[in-house]
Image (cartoon, rainbow, N blue to C red; front, side, top):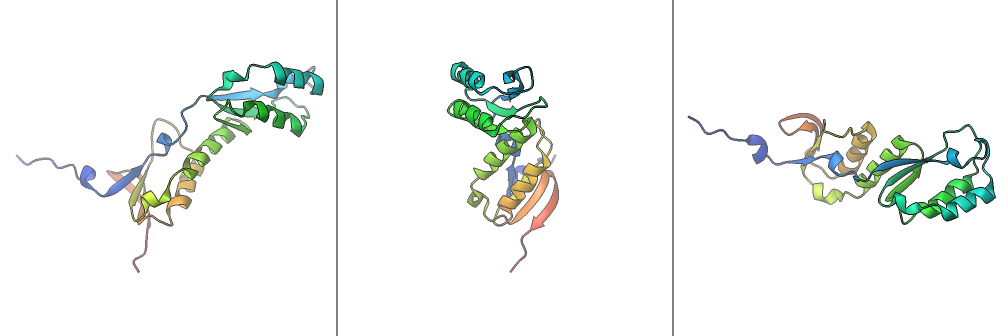
Amino acid sequence: MEEIINRVAQSALTTLNLELLLHPGERVVYDIKHNLFQGLILREKDFREFVKTHDWSQYDGKNVAIICSADAIVPTWAYMLLATKLQGHAHRYVFGDLEALEQELFQDAIAAIDAEEYRDAKVVVKGCGSIPVPTYAYVAIMQKLLPVAASMMYGEPCSTVPLYKRPKV
């Protein structure tokens, strides 16, 4: 009987799993609508008092999306004031919904990659995982690694879709 050889394990492919790069912290929404007077306006004095006395430690290590779901005009400084309190508590905070937060987290993760670690590598960007990876993250990783990688593929090491191969000079 012949020995079974795992050619995938012996290959020179480098697998990059984007979902493993993502910050694992909890994602929460801070909705400024709860600070509106009669659901319509933001009163500066009341808001400043709230910001001063609120327990911001509940956001320690979390990723926060700041929104206003009410149909109200909220001055820009109010969001900026929230940022002053989230700084030092939240891992990351953004103005926008959870999708905007996720995009920022992926952008942060991809920016932190040292592209030189992938120089001349045959890179497989892992598809299908337990966490949905948005398309923009896949495009961003291509932008980051195309200048250095020898080739780029998508999928699993045993079944890849070739995307790019550096031309031979």
